[in-house]
Image (cartoon, rainbow, N blue to C red; front, side):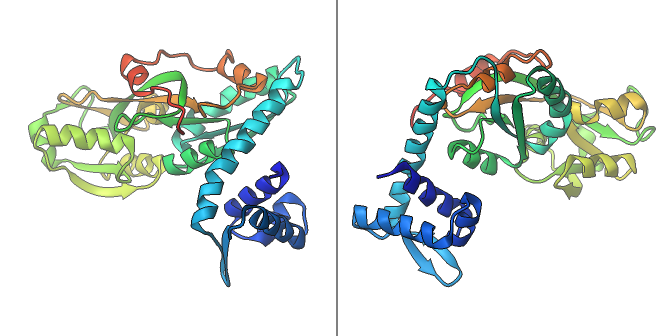
Length: 309
């Protein structure tokens, strides 16, 4: 099997149609069709069901996809390993939660670009599922995400950071220094991010342990929404410190202390376990502008490297 044909196969899967794959690759649609048909003839199976509204993988196609991605990744690793590079160059593709992206990446990438101007930066934001898919398929070099302890991760982890979670409200709503008792939280209106968000999950865990059923006045799918609603006086927002610290310092929001509520989440920079570390990637991990932090014992234990990504 030719790597060129395998690449066309994978691009067709990701694009969802032969025509879009052809456009992305700079081929004619007939070329893409011919390469896919060549693979099918070589393997003696049908890889796609051709439907009026698009293409879907057959079972043999799903099996091939897993191996094709691995082969293409290894081929890219081999190309990079033998290519002589005295300084970082090429592309560096980074994905991150939107909250981490806006809070940390601008200053970091500005300094990185000043140090390594030959590196072209590609930034993608998204949720954990989208980032995991892009990392696993080789479309990202790094993903910066909030670590989740529910599952062991097959990713390699770098640059762990801890982020305290704060409760914030409009200035004067409760008064500076006031501590809300856990027993009285059912009378407080809360503004939370969407279900499954790590910040919300920590708050829900706290409430569950204390037998509290919080009054959730509003849910929003963005940190900006929670900050805006909290500032308007609608309720108490639950957000990571990096998203609200400057607003608290400027007096736009006020931190609300809740008895016994001192959670934190941890983020880390992840890459594929068999991904070859390019000079651009190594430079990013050691960039002076990157905030340094230890990976906690919990993170080290959870992020055991496995080779079956």
